[in-house]
Image 1 (cartoon, helix red, strand yellow):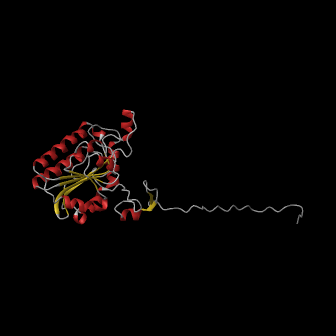
Image 2 (cartoon, rainbow, N blue to C red):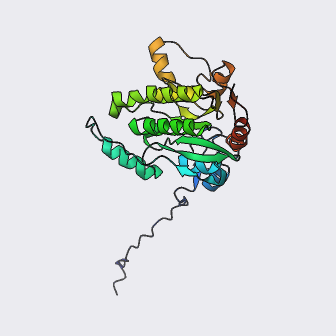
Image 3 (cartoon, helix red, strand yellow):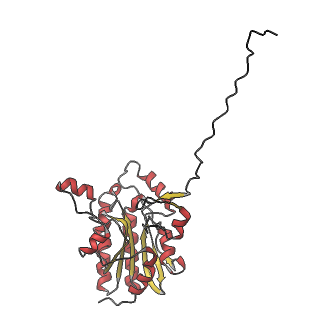
Length: 282
């Protein structure tokens, strides 16, 4: 053995352990209001609100149906029978429609039908922010108008829950903008029939939806801190070159200035609607 030579040992590299524990996806959510990390199951069990600060997260239309309608179902679903086309051949529109269907399990950004709320037969339409931001195209406008016309025939009240960040859908051009007039005219006929229309505004409600049926309610209810607008605050500031008031376009600001009637927490919304439906329209 050669005493003057160091033996050659094999170098073995031991992989370092990752000190950060892997957190499964879709387990927790950071609340944008209070910055607390909340288990998603806690949020879901609280009707998609933060159990710490009561921040209202977006709620899919099908979940909201289960929250508001008796037994969580329609007696007769009127939506889902017509589908959007691509009249302008707008690039990427078909792909966005397919993505919206996959995200929401709906044919378009609205679900509507006849149900009972607190035992009272009612027309209910709910827009879904998860479908192209709840934007209003030809299908959404047609579905809402058909529901209102059906309620006119049956002499029953209407509730529409709005959540639309995109307003009228630019991919359909003037056909989308026409829905503002169509839905407004249908609501005028509902008013002539002496029937109640309750509009519920969730976060956000904007654009052509705000400029049409969302703000035409006999009673207008908003969820806490909901952003309610036509144009967004950044667009307005850039246009008028002025800073806007604090909390501008939030539900509380609009209530102070007489734009909406009530702010109701999501947990109290069904019993509030049930009580309002018993009030005769003057």
